[in-house]
Amino acid sequence: MPSDGRFAPSPSSDLHLGNLRTALIAWLAARHQGARFMLRIDDLDGGRSRPEIAERQLADLAALGLDHDGPVPRQSERLGRYRAAFEHLEAAGQVYPCFCTRAEIREASSAPHGRPAGSYPGTCRWLSEPERAERAASGRVPAWRLRSSLAPELVVDLVQGTVRVAPEDVVLRRADGGFGYQLAVVLDDADQGVGEVVRGADLLDSVGTQRELQRALGLPPVDYAHVPLMLGPDGERLAKRHGASTLADALAGTSGVKLAGVTPGTPASAAEVRGSLAASAGLCEPGSVPELDELVAGFSYRRLPTESTMMQGC
Ligand code: GLU
Image (tube, rainbow, N blue to C red; front, side, top):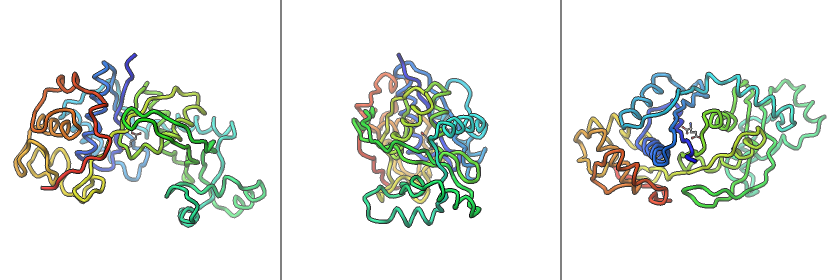
């Protein structure tokens, strides 16, 4: 049975070459098995999302020849779905109010207790009813967190191998009423019929939480493939500060990132950029310009590097 795939960019900035490489791998993984490939616009964060950026992201994917099946849902149009799922979890006693401010979380999670940086220290999870009522009476509007099992499990990632992941008490609903990424993404993937989630390795840590939410909401489990990130010459995740690194930059010959087979400072074709991205992921020879169907035929997760790819500047 082929497992349908997807790519789900957040339209807060243009896709850089690392994002495009992830999209290419996700597309190849789906097409190699004759599966459908869906797109989605992850514009849950209304403050940072721009419709014109979403349009450019879709145009970039099309320019690389990455076609898609079905409509392209926007998270901003699915709030009713998220609300219903949240209320289901609330009715099942699987959420709790969290009155912590960001500063309080930062302070509590910097204490030396071996918890991963940024994870919630659990302060409000253990409040008694009177303590909860006292905080509510103080006028602070709470966010709502998942009461996770905190139980680690082993998951076989199609690229990373067997990994130990643990769910976290993530925010499902913010104090301003907005919904959290983890809740939205499991509902979106299930509703789009996605069976294989291919995305950047920076999201590996969310698998434990997403697995748990899928179970709590009665959604089918999905397989995961967390693909290596592209890093700038300084070893940091590719970003704007590394200079021009979008498809438009590469096509115009102004890319600040060196692409195999492309002479720095000269314009490249979309097929050359695609070939270069594929080569950087071990999917073709550096400098070659394969047709898409050659890449589809030769695709295997086993060819991908497991480490991040360091790119050179130019
Ligand atoms: N929208 C997320 C991002 O652009 C990706 C979500 C996912 O792949 O699960 O980082």
